[in-house]
Length: 277
Image 1 (cartoon, helix red, strand yellow):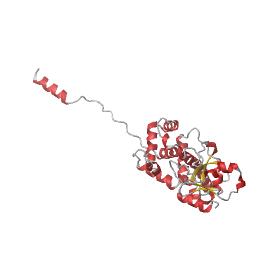
Image 2 (cartoon, rainbow, N blue to C red):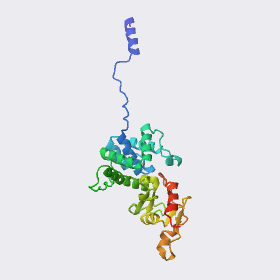
Image 3 (tube, rainbow, N blue to C red):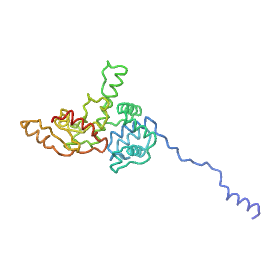
Image 4 (cartoon, rainbow, N blue to C red):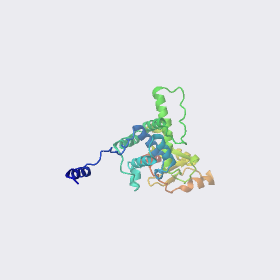
């Protein structure tokens, strides 16, 4: 082997052949519309359903062109911002972005505005769940600001109900009844008295239709220790059904939600202003 051959062999060993280097694909950032839609989905699913095999997660992922695992991870990232989830020891992933935090803050600060923006994002991305109810019709004489406010409230009512019912795993917090069609997202502070809190899930309880009505007219309430108080004003002639269905729950503790716990201040207001002593 000549010196030229040796030099050529050494050079070939030291200098790799020219080839095209393949780069890892760039991770696509979540758009604001996608984040808002993910926030909507977060309110509609219980924490235990934040996984890539969930049919709603799969449908959502297909609609926005992401993997189910990526959507599940985003929901867990949002869960890491939820103080109720994290305080229960079921913390989500720790990868919440600045955009996640900004969207979460918007949600907590102004539920009507969030509900409307999120619903519009869901419609634009065509990622609504198959069982989503259509938005209620708005009277044709609403125009401008009034129409906008009315639509926000109508859309928000749907999200409010989903968030409250889901937070209690679709069970009445007083009786444990688990028939969704008989459950109501009941307002603690009446709708007419607190416009700013109408769509706040912390102003909601999941109750059966009967207990929602009894709560609304002050025949039952919830004490500061989370036990049920039954009004002493109901006469004994109310009948056996009253005692079996309502009065028997006196002193029992309600089931607490996994998210959006009822505000102690709202419950105190109900006891002071609505409950019949």
